[in-house]
Length: 107
Image 1 (tube, helix red, strand yellow):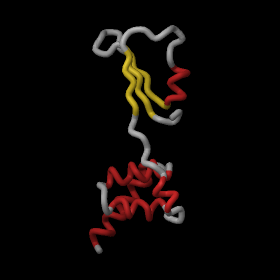
Image 2: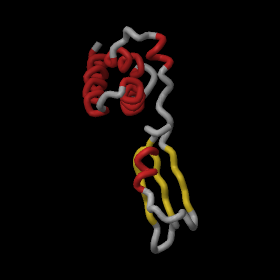
Image 3: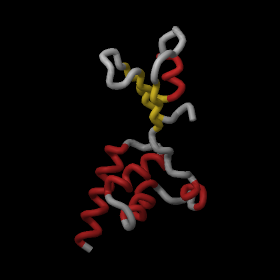
């Protein structure tokens, strides 16, 4: 879980509310050295999609996997799942998804 995105909030709705965001490992270094007092909220980003699909079909490229995801999910959701699955840039995957969507529409 050290690579999971988190938001840590202190004293919400008060004049001195504070926020820290980043990976779990980075937050530990960013927190103030004094003991944590008061009200705190910890928000977790959604967990990445399980990698079982990739392990079951390791020969699939990101583009092939994305094309399959587009059959069942919106472009946004398919790109998010592919980014989590392959660790590639969402921007590059989004361009690929748009190209695949247009290709599918003209077929």
